[in-house]
Image 1 (cartoon, rainbow, N blue to C red):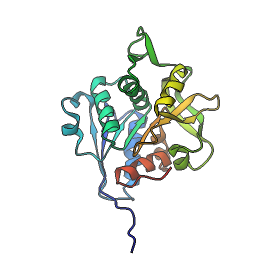
Image 2 (cartoon, one colour):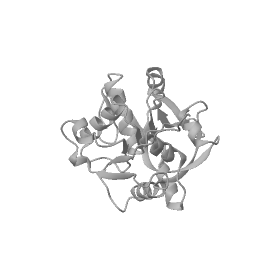
Image 3 (cartoon, rainbow, N blue to C red):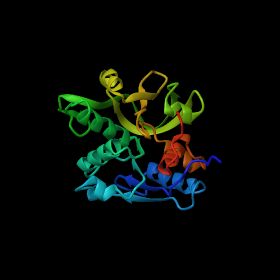
Image 4 (cartoon, rainbow, N blue to C red):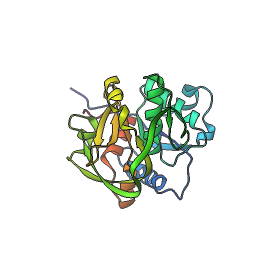
Length: 241
Protein backbone atom coordinates (compact mmCIF):
# COMPACT_ATOMS: atom_id res chain seq x y z
CA UNK A 1 0.00 0.00 0.00
CA UNK A 2 1.47 3.34 -1.05
CA UNK A 3 1.28 6.10 1.51
CA UNK A 4 0.75 9.76 0.67
CA UNK A 5 3.23 12.55 1.20
CA UNK A 6 4.63 12.95 4.71
CA UNK A 7 3.93 16.28 6.34
CA UNK A 8 5.81 17.72 9.30
CA UNK A 9 4.65 20.55 11.55
CA UNK A 10 5.77 23.79 9.95
CA UNK A 11 7.64 26.37 11.99
CA UNK A 12 8.36 29.42 9.86
CA UNK A 13 10.86 32.21 10.59
CA UNK A 14 9.65 35.64 9.45
CA UNK A 15 12.83 37.69 9.14
CA UNK A 16 12.37 41.44 9.08
CA UNK A 17 11.73 44.46 11.25
CA UNK A 18 8.09 43.92 12.18
CA UNK A 19 5.79 46.93 12.09
CA UNK A 20 2.05 46.35 12.56
CA UNK A 21 1.32 49.35 10.34
CA UNK A 22 3.08 47.82 7.31
CA UNK A 23 0.44 46.39 4.98
CA UNK A 24 2.64 43.50 3.87
CA UNK A 25 3.28 42.48 7.49
CA UNK A 26 -0.46 42.47 8.13
CA UNK A 27 -0.88 40.33 5.02
CA UNK A 28 1.78 37.84 6.10
CA UNK A 29 0.12 37.23 9.45
CA UNK A 30 -3.26 36.86 7.78
CA UNK A 31 -1.88 34.51 5.09
CA UNK A 32 -0.48 32.16 7.69
CA UNK A 33 -3.63 32.33 9.79
CA UNK A 34 -5.67 31.26 6.75
CA UNK A 35 -3.22 28.46 5.96
CA UNK A 36 -3.56 26.92 9.39
CA UNK A 37 -6.39 24.94 7.75
CA UNK A 38 -3.65 22.82 6.13
CA UNK A 39 -2.09 22.00 9.47
CA UNK A 40 -3.40 23.46 12.75
CA UNK A 41 0.00 22.81 14.34
CA UNK A 42 1.73 25.23 11.96
CA UNK A 43 3.52 28.05 13.76
CA UNK A 44 5.62 31.07 12.91
CA UNK A 45 7.74 33.65 14.68
CA UNK A 46 8.80 37.15 13.76
CA UNK A 47 12.58 37.55 14.09
CA UNK A 48 13.80 41.13 14.14
CA UNK A 49 16.94 41.56 12.08
CA UNK A 50 18.75 43.07 15.08
CA UNK A 51 18.65 39.60 16.69
CA UNK A 52 20.39 37.88 13.76
CA UNK A 53 23.97 37.15 14.76
CA UNK A 54 26.31 34.25 15.32
CA UNK A 55 25.91 30.80 13.80
CA UNK A 56 22.90 30.59 11.45
CA UNK A 57 22.24 26.88 12.03
CA UNK A 58 22.19 27.40 15.80
CA UNK A 59 19.84 30.37 15.62
CA UNK A 60 17.60 29.26 12.76
CA UNK A 61 17.85 25.47 12.93
CA UNK A 62 14.47 25.12 14.66
CA UNK A 63 12.63 26.49 11.62
CA UNK A 64 11.37 24.42 8.71
CA UNK A 65 11.25 27.46 6.39
CA UNK A 66 12.42 31.07 6.21
CA UNK A 67 10.57 34.09 4.80
CA UNK A 68 12.47 37.37 4.42
CA UNK A 69 9.72 39.95 4.49
CA UNK A 70 9.20 43.46 3.05
CA UNK A 71 10.02 46.85 4.65
CA UNK A 72 13.71 47.40 4.03
CA UNK A 73 16.30 48.80 4.57
CA UNK A 74 16.64 46.41 7.48
CA UNK A 75 18.27 47.36 10.76
CA UNK A 76 20.79 44.53 10.34
CA UNK A 77 21.26 43.74 6.63
CA UNK A 78 24.34 41.59 7.28
CA UNK A 79 22.24 39.29 9.44
CA UNK A 80 19.66 39.08 6.66
CA UNK A 81 22.35 38.13 4.14
CA UNK A 82 23.74 35.30 6.27
CA UNK A 83 20.23 33.99 6.96
CA UNK A 84 19.50 33.91 3.21
CA UNK A 85 22.79 32.16 2.51
CA UNK A 86 21.98 29.60 5.20
CA UNK A 87 18.58 28.87 3.65
CA UNK A 88 20.05 28.59 0.18
CA UNK A 89 22.99 26.36 1.07
CA UNK A 90 21.18 24.20 3.67
CA UNK A 91 18.26 23.78 1.24
CA UNK A 92 15.70 25.23 3.65
CA UNK A 93 12.46 26.34 1.93
CA UNK A 94 12.78 30.07 1.37
CA UNK A 95 10.52 32.90 0.27
CA UNK A 96 11.73 36.47 -0.23
CA UNK A 97 9.17 39.15 -1.03
CA UNK A 98 9.90 42.78 -1.99
CA UNK A 99 12.93 43.65 0.17
CA UNK A 100 13.49 39.91 0.59
CA UNK A 101 13.75 39.60 -3.21
CA UNK A 102 16.29 42.42 -3.37
CA UNK A 103 18.50 41.09 -0.57
CA UNK A 104 18.37 37.49 -1.77
CA UNK A 105 19.57 38.51 -5.23
CA UNK A 106 22.45 40.46 -3.68
CA UNK A 107 23.40 37.49 -1.48
CA UNK A 108 23.42 35.19 -4.48
CA UNK A 109 25.45 37.57 -6.61
CA UNK A 110 28.05 38.00 -3.87
CA UNK A 111 28.45 34.39 -2.80
CA UNK A 112 27.79 32.50 -6.04
CA UNK A 113 28.91 34.92 -8.74
CA UNK A 114 31.62 36.61 -6.68
CA UNK A 115 30.35 40.10 -7.44
CA UNK A 116 30.73 43.02 -5.04
CA UNK A 117 27.01 43.61 -5.48
CA UNK A 118 25.17 46.42 -3.74
CA UNK A 119 21.77 48.08 -3.42
CA UNK A 120 21.43 51.58 -4.89
CA UNK A 121 19.25 52.67 -1.97
CA UNK A 122 21.88 51.93 0.67
CA UNK A 123 25.10 52.15 -1.38
CA UNK A 124 24.40 54.63 -4.20
CA UNK A 125 28.07 55.12 -5.02
CA UNK A 126 29.01 51.43 -5.26
CA UNK A 127 30.49 50.28 -8.59
CA UNK A 128 28.27 47.17 -8.89
CA UNK A 129 24.66 48.32 -8.65
CA UNK A 130 22.67 45.08 -8.71
CA UNK A 131 19.46 46.58 -7.30
CA UNK A 132 18.58 49.88 -8.99
CA UNK A 133 15.62 52.25 -9.20
CA UNK A 134 12.65 50.96 -11.17
CA UNK A 135 11.77 52.78 -14.37
CA UNK A 136 8.46 53.67 -12.69
CA UNK A 137 7.79 53.69 -8.95
CA UNK A 138 5.63 50.79 -7.77
CA UNK A 139 4.74 52.16 -4.35
CA UNK A 140 1.15 51.14 -3.61
CA UNK A 141 0.63 50.18 -7.25
CA UNK A 142 -0.95 47.18 -8.95
CA UNK A 143 0.93 45.61 -11.83
CA UNK A 144 0.39 42.73 -14.22
CA UNK A 145 2.62 39.67 -13.80
CA UNK A 146 3.23 36.84 -16.26
CA UNK A 147 4.82 33.64 -14.85
CA UNK A 148 7.43 32.08 -17.13
CA UNK A 149 6.19 28.73 -18.49
CA UNK A 150 8.03 25.72 -17.10
CA UNK A 151 8.97 27.34 -13.79
CA UNK A 152 7.76 26.34 -10.35
CA UNK A 153 6.17 29.77 -10.07
CA UNK A 154 4.10 29.10 -13.20
CA UNK A 155 3.00 25.69 -11.93
CA UNK A 156 1.90 27.18 -8.63
CA UNK A 157 0.33 30.27 -10.17
CA UNK A 158 -1.91 28.18 -12.38
CA UNK A 159 -2.82 30.93 -14.85
CA UNK A 160 -0.93 32.87 -17.54
CA UNK A 161 -1.13 36.24 -15.83
CA UNK A 162 -2.32 38.04 -12.72
CA UNK A 163 -2.40 41.42 -11.04
CA UNK A 164 -0.16 41.92 -8.02
CA UNK A 165 0.33 44.60 -5.37
CA UNK A 166 3.66 46.37 -4.87
CA UNK A 167 5.32 48.77 -2.48
CA UNK A 168 8.78 49.34 -3.92
CA UNK A 169 11.01 51.69 -5.86
CA UNK A 170 13.88 49.28 -6.61
CA UNK A 171 14.31 46.13 -8.68
CA UNK A 172 16.88 43.96 -10.42
CA UNK A 173 19.28 45.75 -12.75
CA UNK A 174 18.51 44.13 -16.14
CA UNK A 175 22.20 44.18 -17.05
CA UNK A 176 22.72 41.20 -14.70
CA UNK A 177 19.81 38.99 -15.73
CA UNK A 178 21.73 36.85 -18.23
CA UNK A 179 24.58 36.27 -15.78
CA UNK A 180 22.21 35.23 -13.00
CA UNK A 181 20.28 32.86 -15.26
CA UNK A 182 23.47 31.27 -16.58
CA UNK A 183 24.43 30.43 -12.99
CA UNK A 184 21.06 28.89 -12.11
CA UNK A 185 18.94 31.69 -10.61
CA UNK A 186 16.26 31.92 -13.28
CA UNK A 187 13.52 34.40 -14.10
CA UNK A 188 10.17 33.06 -12.89
CA UNK A 189 7.87 35.97 -13.76
CA UNK A 190 7.95 39.24 -15.71
CA UNK A 191 5.72 42.27 -16.07
CA UNK A 192 4.10 43.40 -19.32
CA UNK A 193 7.27 45.27 -20.32
CA UNK A 194 9.45 42.20 -19.76
CA UNK A 195 11.04 43.41 -16.50
CA UNK A 196 11.86 40.75 -13.91
CA UNK A 197 9.29 40.37 -11.16
CA UNK A 198 10.22 36.95 -9.73
CA UNK A 199 13.22 34.62 -9.62
CA UNK A 200 13.71 31.03 -8.47
CA UNK A 201 16.31 28.31 -7.98
CA UNK A 202 14.95 25.21 -9.76
CA UNK A 203 17.34 22.78 -8.04
CA UNK A 204 16.46 23.98 -4.56
CA UNK A 205 13.54 22.37 -2.68
CA UNK A 206 11.85 25.79 -2.66
CA UNK A 207 13.64 29.10 -3.24
CA UNK A 208 11.36 31.78 -4.68
CA UNK A 209 11.77 35.55 -4.82
CA UNK A 210 9.05 38.03 -5.75
CA UNK A 211 9.39 41.77 -6.13
CA UNK A 212 5.63 42.03 -5.65
CA UNK A 213 3.91 41.24 -2.36
CA UNK A 214 1.74 38.12 -2.74
CA UNK A 215 0.86 38.27 0.95
CA UNK A 216 -1.45 41.23 0.27
CA UNK A 217 -4.12 38.94 -1.19
CA UNK A 218 -4.82 37.54 2.26
CA UNK A 219 -6.22 40.91 3.33
CA UNK A 220 -9.05 40.13 0.89
CA UNK A 221 -9.48 36.65 2.34
CA UNK A 222 -7.50 34.83 -0.38
CA UNK A 223 -4.27 32.87 0.05
CA UNK A 224 -1.85 33.52 -2.80
CA UNK A 225 -0.80 30.28 -4.55
CA UNK A 226 2.90 31.15 -4.19
CA UNK A 227 2.50 31.58 -0.42
CA UNK A 228 0.52 28.34 -0.30
CA UNK A 229 3.34 26.57 -2.17
CA UNK A 230 5.88 27.93 0.29
CA UNK A 231 3.91 26.64 3.26
CA UNK A 232 3.55 23.23 1.60
CA UNK A 233 7.33 23.17 1.30
CA UNK A 234 7.64 24.11 4.97
CA UNK A 235 5.43 21.12 5.78
CA UNK A 236 7.84 18.85 3.96
CA UNK A 237 5.87 18.46 0.75
CA UNK A 238 7.35 20.30 -2.23
CA UNK A 239 4.92 20.84 -5.13
CA UNK A 240 6.26 19.49 -8.43
CA UNK A 241 7.04 22.22 -10.97
